[in-house]
Amino acid sequence: MNETKILSNFIERTRFEDLPTNVFKMVKNSILDALGCGIAGFTLEKDALNPIFALVNEMEGKPEATVIVDGLKTNCLHAALANGSFIHSIDFDDTHQAALTHTSSVLVPAALALGEKVNSDGKELLLAIALGFEAATKVGQSVMPSLFRFWHSTAMNGTIGAAALAGKLLHLNAEKMNLTFGIAADIASGTLACIEFGDLTKSLHAGMAAMKGMLAGLLVKGGATGPQDIFEYSKGYCNAYSEKPKLEKITENLGHPFEIIFNGIKGFPSILASHTSIQAVTVIVRKEKLSADLIKEISVKTYNLVESSFCNYNPQTLLAARLSVPFCIALAAVDGEVTLQSFNEKRVFDPKIRDLMKKISVKGTPELNSLYPEKFPAEVEIITKDGKKFCGGEYYPRGSYYNPLTQEEIESKFISLATVTFSEKQALKIMETINNFEEIKTISELTNLLVVPRDTVS
Image (cartoon, rainbow, N blue to C red):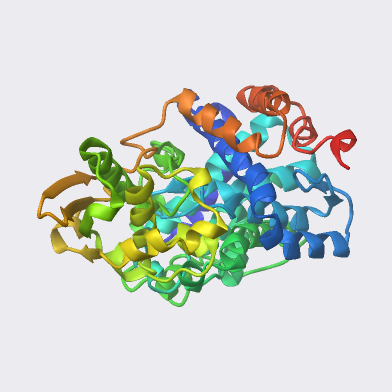
């Protein structure tokens, strides 16, 4: 029962040279994907995000880190809060399936902000992000899926990952890393209400997790104490948030392989639980050339969590629609595809989509639930008004470990997102810098590129 110590020791002793080539390539792709989402999110969700940006701007602070796109310089905690919220705002950011955590939306803003403060180089940041992934997802697997009864994994397990990242960048030893985990676990929070209501709290969860994990590390760096051995403590993190915590998951095969290998880069701008259903529905409607007007019923069998947590049949916001599996299924059936352009405020209340949602049933089954989380199974049956029946199934979300995007697709996704806000020339320069990330001497070589040139601002 010394999981916290073992994890803390692993973080202290692991060096950049310990990372296999495929690991730091995955870290680079995670940075690229997260920043693409944040750059687009800043523009597409500007009105929704404005309260966060306005408050950070008003509070000012020591100019030690950059708020992306705008270029505001503020303290590292507030920069991470803003940037994490931007990245998570369009729900197109990556997801680690087993931990069900949007890990990069927490770790990338923490790395940028704290890296600017302490003047980290590219290798230090690549290592810190890889270790943050390891902590967030190992601890996440120890408490999932039970944690997801009430709590949002990104907010909770993301905070743990940001604490590990901060501890590494601040050069904390294992004993202090242990204390950092104690403080981070104590202040982590974020309920699942955000999924149903689709409000600002879901975006805030990523930014707050980044900020809280960094805060824990900075406090310990300054001499603060916290609870020790928090993961195995009888009233600590794992026992508080899981009915049957699997503590062995925390230390099982640490770094063999690194958990970031299993990270998934999303292929659709919606909740991951919707993706296999989207894939199955689009295959059927395209192949059979089905018009949504001809559909009498769509039945989806899947794993239990989809039915219990992601089936809002009356989304009232754009984000709530992205988080509603029935909405995403209806959108796929009506359009024959789901893209970033598919989602806008008008579509949330589109009568055609709303009418079709009434004909959709989503049910978890014991057989398919037993396949989760290695698989995200969805078996779809579409019945038309003239009695025809079409069936299909998908088990791995596009972009996941077993159904990955190609490097070309990952880079194309980034360019499409970044050019929502920046010129293609600037987007390509950002991508080039990230692809050579281990060579940069200071993170400002990247953050200076993440700002709209002032001569383009009216």
